[in-house]
Length: 145
Image (cartoon, rainbow, N blue to C red; front, side, top):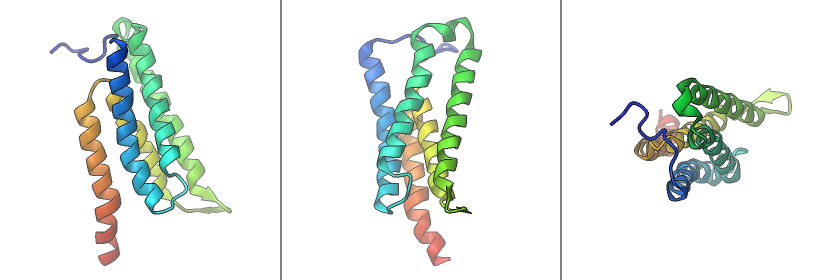
């Protein structure tokens, strides 16, 4: 396995698989948030995930990553900053802070999608499972404690 494994331009089928995996990871989080009627629900998480994956796939597909890995780092940094901005929009409502978990979920959706976009589908799916456990199961533990 080379240092840039997964970071070389791929065919359309692989791009579809990476975007699909990004959407699947975001779907897990979005459905959980939607089931609790949170502000950042299914559509928000899906759109953040899709956008994050696309922004990361572009420099890979155009070969910019092979010229400089810094290009990928800057793309990821921009995605995570943007996801934080979207998350902040879910937190501030009616002049009060509410919904930090939903904001964190949006941020995690972006991170899962970045992993998928880089060809790390296992990391994306494992991360989605852990995020679901944190959001669903630990919520019940938190209420109990």
